[in-house]
Length: 75
Length: 245
Image 1: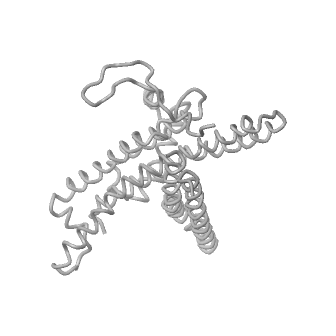
Image 2: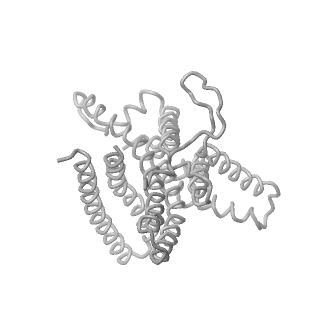
Image 3: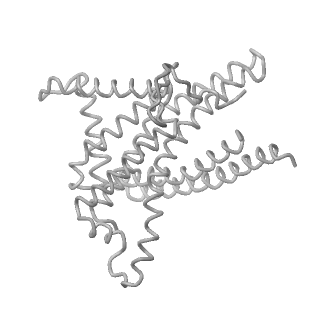
């Protein structure tokens, strides 16, 4: 296969997996946070802060992939 | 159409090189200067007439600083974090204004350039380790990286394992901020670029509507990314102040 086509394809595949897994993880995280703050409304503030930090850490993984995909596509 | 077209920086005025360093300012530098001046003017205007009853600019800045103190520093670092509020607040305000400057047509987002976010992350990296060494002393700080009660022969292995993790922190800080700002602007351009790609005016309302929605989302992300950068800096500083694990 043409290396250029291969690079585009692999960029798309990398982004697909990253978006899939990170979306799933953030959904899980949000579910946990909502369940936690529904059970203990007084801890909602602390749960929200922790959730945002964890979401940022998860999101970073898909963003690394995004950077790699951009590098693959623009090479 | 190249989606990365607007990230290419060109020098505005050509200045001589000093060794390998190019001093010519480009749009990113100008935008950064503008946001620095705006932060300075905002805080200066707020600090000029301090009275018990806060109003005007003073009230706005007071709310923001109280947010930094009560939501960022105190939950992360506790009472020992009070001396670090100026640092965290500076990082927060600077990144927020840099992010916001990208939403003004004609300006550039300084934080969508990896060099600027990497510099910010390196500042945080040095701040963390220098704080730790100053609080605990050189040897006690590095000893604190390894959990207590570990047998002596395991110490070097665990210490070596901690080095990549401490190097990954500034790396992820820099890349997160950069990629978020970068991705937002690429999405914005791709939406608007649809009009040019499809060569039809009938399609125009939909990309414009999409771009407006993404723009609102970007406005949220400017504050959110500054918050995340500041809160993670506070978290890393708290690890250094409280002696790690």
